[in-house]
Image 1 (tube, rainbow, N blue to C red):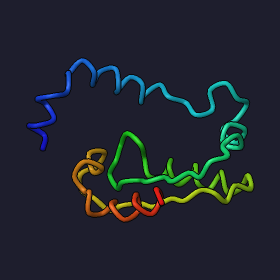
Image 2: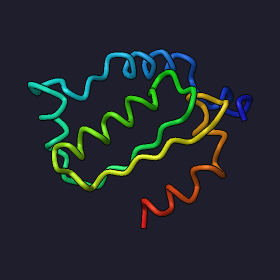
Image 3: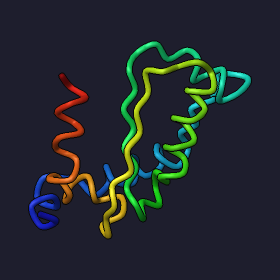
Image 4: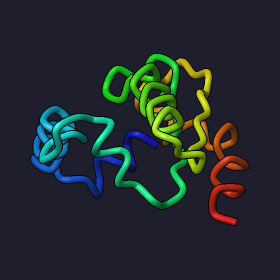
Length: 105
């Protein structure tokens, strides 16, 4: 599917997306990450993919753990084993399908 992706995705967009990922900070505008996460009132479903070096599974797990420590029980985290790293969400559909379906119900 990588070939099809290049047909409709502007390569310059990739540069902006990459920059946004690199500079994004959940705690920006707050005194701490805990304060920022405490503001979340909706259910939060986090997916970490093994070998994802853009959104590290350890970071996803830390967010879930920190939210629970703040008394938030509306958070769920799952880690998917995959050799595809960050692209796993595009390739490992069969591994995340049921999790996403359950989250949307």
